[in-house]
Image: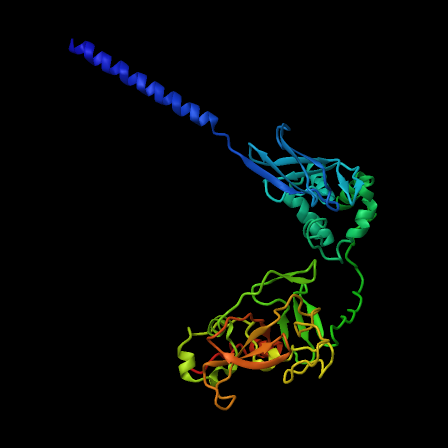
Length: 408
């Protein structure tokens, strides 16, 4: 009897295990992993193009989608990359796009399907490169660092307009791709449209940059900085919190705002803090940062005030702009686009500079009317703009001594 009871218990336990295993197996088999492949189809943006995503190794179709007005697409797939993509049909600029674009993508992010991507695919398929090595090879021989149909590429390396004219809405796509591949592999010395080979001779003398308002020179790879040739100072063209957009030549986003103390603690790295009262300095986190970019003094910030009407003068921080026929904010809009229209903090405390003013005050520039004044340092939140002094940086580098912050 006891043996029969033990046998019965064993059979029940096995049955439970089998049921649980079956349930677990069923749940596992129903869990399908979903991944996303996304990017753009671009010669210029190709709208309404059908994008098919294939497994790079097996060739099976994993999913498809249609591009929107910006050429963007998103495809949900169930297996990891690499992927092969094919884009067919659609319109570009209201005209039917006749070329069939293809690309190889190692992951699901940033899978742009462009003529340049077709060049990389051809180098992979026919010449034994992988995608990264193919891109590096083209960059080494031409200076094209990135996909010129999607990203900003140096005009000295690639003429995008010439390439698009040769491709001609897709009709010349295949010939252009073959030409670039043959040039990249040394099969021909004929430079394809759009490619600009580095000059082997003496470089031409640099052209004089065009001045904005007769005094500002944009510089930097993306021209996100500007140099004032009258004062020698260099400025970030965007206020803190904004992002420079090279394509639009403007500043994206809204400026960040700061209490004056917070602005000083974040960017107060200039020498005249040694004149501040100990009571003011003791309230702030020490030491201040030591970056090159810093809050301007009120004299430096005031030098940007600009009366477009010339009344009383173009650059005059001591008097507000007169009348109504001037541009607001009162700062050159080409040099400093999308600028704050009202108060902007300087790093200058009003302590000791104005009779009857104590350490609770600080100087600001008023870009609505075009003058400088002071305000309660703790009483309002305003945007800030950063400056640096190349002469001071040069002296620092030659001496090997860090910029002075404050005598200890």
